[in-house]
Length: 189
Image 1: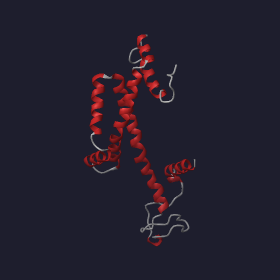
Image 2: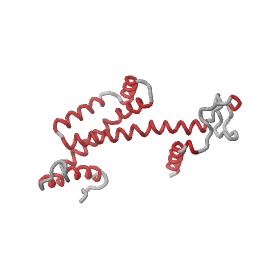
Image 3: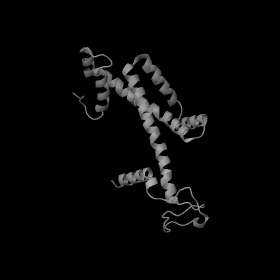
Image 4: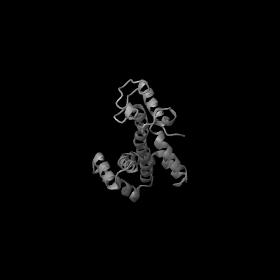
């Protein structure tokens, strides 16, 4: 519980950095340079250019959070979408999507991220893109396997037998059961 509180505190301080009344993290002063930890008004001291280290740490946390969270969210959306489409449609589309995903498994993740970043060039956006591309295959593989498993369950077959076509309850049953099946052994009614 204490760890969760510390993580929430770090996350909140990074998000609310402009409103915390901290010193400007970019403005230096040669008079204040190399102040030690615990100096009044500088709890973490100052660096060799006289910039407040606490302000720099909190403002830097904003960028770290963006680069850490955004690729995961984007990869989840893209990977889940690809996996749902591949698992639900099946056939040649499933084969095409999953073989493309297998190409990304041929390279180690770190090497692939470095290669993509090198090809795209330096920059935060390019780093986010390369990390997203590296995270997508695992999520796609899981979403496809779960969707394929649910697609072949009895209640989906019963919905199809009762006349449900692809864009109607069969799809809704498959999508809801995919997530519901993670928490219960019985499908929703």
